[in-house]
Amino acid sequence: MIARPKIDNYPSIQDWRDQKNEERERLGRCYRGKVFWYEFTLQEAAKKLKTFDMPIAGIDMGFRPWDMENLDSIAYHIDRVNKVDLNYPIILDDLGNVRDGFHRIVKAMIENKKTIKAVRFKEMPPVDGNDERDNDKE
Image (cartoon, rainbow, N blue to C red):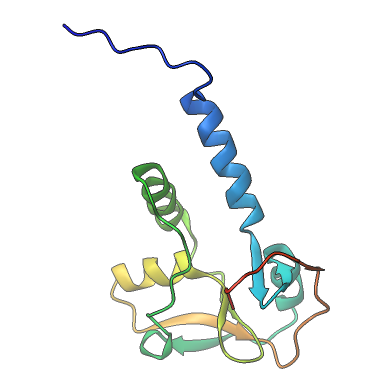
């Protein structure tokens, strides 16, 4: 058997996962240009909005909500899809774009649902911040 060489300064799997989870937390932001809202800000503000049934066919399926570059990331999102509760509505912004709920959309698609519960802002809540780095996410 060939022994694998020891690589110094290589992060452990747990360190790597912790770093990825920190990145996922950072990605808990919903961007429009350089301004962003935290997902929890939108979720709290959305509690006051009226729920309606959104046709799944009316959702832009060309949007790429996640970067899935490796198996750990794919497993993370599959786990999230399996655990989501479709009783919580997806959140649409004032332009009709999905701001929260992509895992719920995927679950609804897998379950062959025709509609999904949704809420839509007529006016967005105040932004949570401005990210100075270039960001092409909407």
